[in-house]
Each structure stands twice: as C-alpha cells, then as structure tokens.
Image (tube, rainbow, N blue to C red; front, top):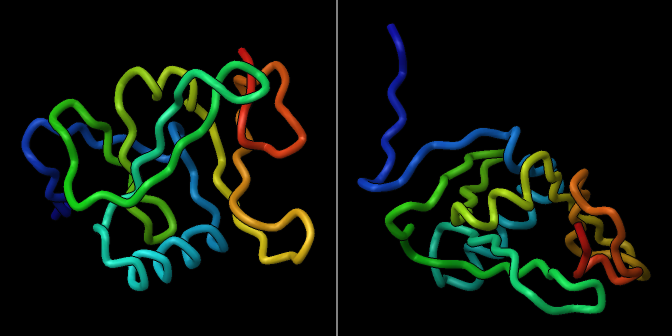
Length: 123
C-alpha cells in the first residue's frame, strides 16, 4: 500500500533535492512556528539585493500560493516559488544556537560567492 501525501491544489510536491532542512533547523522552525502563530509553512524566496546581488528571504505563511513547490524536510514544510527554485536546488538549511555566528545558515551549491553574513550570494 502506498501512502498518499495530501498537497494543496495548484501546489507541486518537491523533495529534499531542492531544499534539505537539517534536524537542528527543523526543530528550530517548528518551535518558531508554534511561537509566532503566523502559519505552518516557511516561505523561502530569492530576491535581488544584498552585498552580492541575491539574498535569501524567509517568512512564515498560513497557506501556499498556486504554483508553489512544497518540500517537507525534518518536520518543516518549506514553500518555494518556481523562480527561486532555480537558485535553491541542492541547498541545505541549517541552524546553530552559537552565541557568535549562530542562526539559520544556507549552504547553496549554486552560489559562486557569498558574503560573510551568509544572507546574500551571487551566481
């Protein structure tokens, strides 16, 4: 018997080849979702800007948009629009609670360079 995963209409199911969330990041996201009460999904988007030309944006949302790609990884539900997916393929999202250099970190194999803050990159 095959388990079926319910996906909202107009949303495609992606996998961890697009975005992989580490266990540490998944646990932190779940606790933030509980605390913030803004929605059960984390939208990850790439926008122009930052010191290297492109930057990562994250926010909690209540529901997906038509055309989104939904990735379930380490207990988190990540939404990516199709344009951002081109830049994110193979990215790992990790979390560290270190006093210095802690927080969420993107490891993006597509980035040719990134700034020291880890919030922007170039292709």
